[in-house]
Length: 139
Image (cartoon, rainbow, N blue to C red; front, top):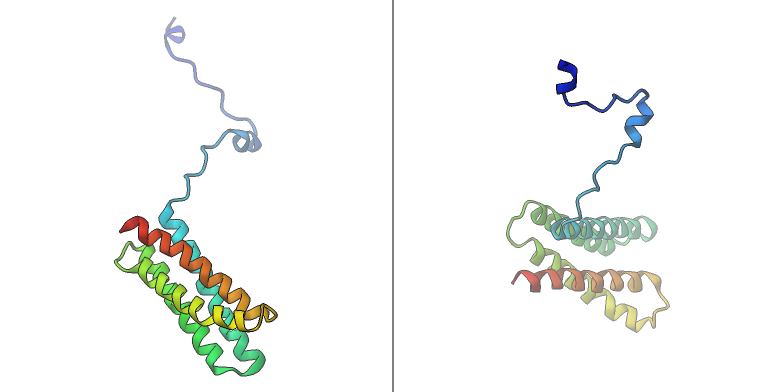
């Protein structure tokens, strides 16, 4: 009689694989802040790696300085955005402006025949659009 009053529990899984087959909740949606951090981090790595590659392949100190400098700006911006500190988006917007401002004219002058200024221009303009939109939406 006492067993009839207790609520029944589902049986425990027999195999470990049965536990993996149960439905898990969907991952939380990516927040706008996290996507800004990801964008700034990717741009930081790409620009710094590009500057180092430019130095290694052609001993270009300006490539090293500019690439690593812009990469550090993007990295600092990613950190500030992630920590919700002031001026993170603005710093990323500044880095994008410098990157696009220096590479787009070179890409236009070369007629798109040189891939490095073209790719840097696309990254800079993409950063301008991404961080400019975030700046306008928070202002």
